Length: 349
Image 1: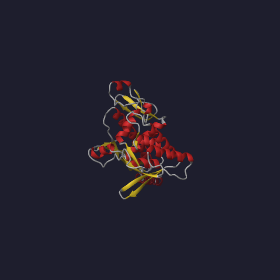
Image 2 (image 1 turned 90 degrees about the horizontal axis):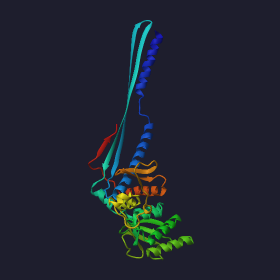
Image 3 (image 1 turned 135 degrees about the vertical axis):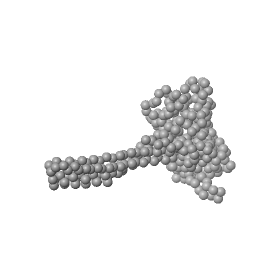
Image 4 (image 1 turned 180 degrees about the vertical axis):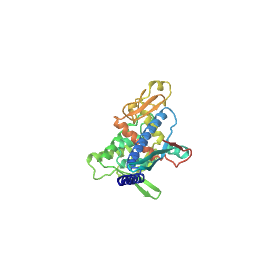
């Protein structure tokens, strides 16, 4: 009898401890943070690629931001016990426990619309942001070919038309100077506001870099004896101490990326896509986008559109880098906005 009483007491104690120790394990933080982060990143790439394709087909772009992800866990537990004493040699103890675990994530989407959003994709990206990326180490050929329309009147490729030979030469020289650490770009506070200074040092340079810097000055038509120049937004400079830069808007950049889509011949023949003057070779575009009737097996980003699949191959490193740069440019263009109606909230259960 005494042994049975001890067993019952031990059972009650176990139930109390079990009911009081239920908790959501910390491992859920690691799993959720990376799983949701990966999903948001993948959807961002696919949305950007879809808009590049849509613009080539003369469709309006559409952006929907994920504004919040709320993951709510509920873990409850309960315990019960009963004892039935019938005779001295017949004792019955009934114990039980149950728990309930639930996860109710809620994802909130915000369509980007309205005046602020449209201005952000139509307004040229500030030259200061573009050239600060050069100073941060982004390759000159990637930055200048993607985001710049012209420099001191030298025209970049546009809508399928090839760039001026002098622009191509300028990009090559600036990239070479950048790789040798001979380029310096800084933002200074001046009386009229901020000024971006583009510096080509004349001292402590190797002969080859000094020759490249001198050739850059010649191509730009600036003072060959000066080491620093002011960057301004415009087509032509007002003096030999100024470098005028026309940058592209996000809409222009996305249209230029669309030149690299390997379009079906039937869509071009039937006039379903925007015609690009000059070269029709997709290889001349900033990125190469393949097209097929089925989803690819190995893609950096892939989207279905108009009954076909469009994708960037995961082994095409140059296209991947340039497409990643496109998404970073979209952040510089400030395409986000404060939450406005309508807001779509989708509970996932």
